[in-house]
Amino acid sequence: MIAGEFKGRRLVTPRGRRTRPTADQVRLALMDTLGPWLPRARVLDLYAGAGGVGLEALSRGAVHATFVERDAQALRALAANVEALGVAGRARVVRQDVGRALQALGRAGERFTIIFLDPPYEDAIDAALEGVARAGLAASDGIVIAQHRTKRPPAAGSGTLVLSRTRKFGETTLTFFRALQAEPPAAI
Image 1: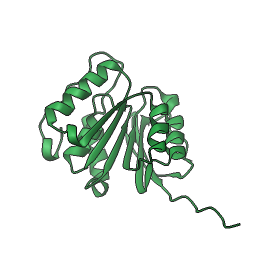
Image 2: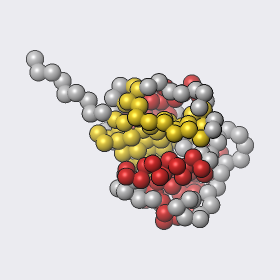
Image 3: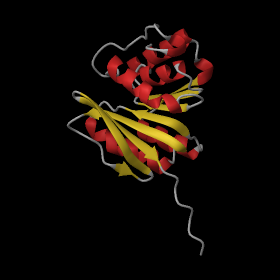
């Protein structure tokens, strides 16, 4: 972990190339940017892998993190990290495909202050953003961050999510979206 309550603690990472942890430099810049949103935040970490982003958010003041991951090796690493850090009461692990998880979380009325996604395959970013918007998962003051290859940016927005800024780190870019409040239905 980089900073906060768990600073200096090492995370277990899954073996192999099926997941790719967010680089420390990128995670540090991400958390610094998210500073105003972190205290008391509810975080949704999609394609969570070993949970580095969500666990770092918990370390820096987030009150709860929901991790969505389906890879068995990544889930074992994530469970070990949640247990080692003693955050089981502040974390929920959802073993499911992201698309299905987004639908279920939306039906349950879940809302998140911070939503992070870093799909292992590039063509999933726009679909995930659309799923987040359709499910209404971002709180009215929420922020959604997509990590992607610099040469493959996501769409400029989806539904109530509009692009607000980007931060580039060589071949990796973080694209930030703000959640706009939906317009109330017009009176008939």
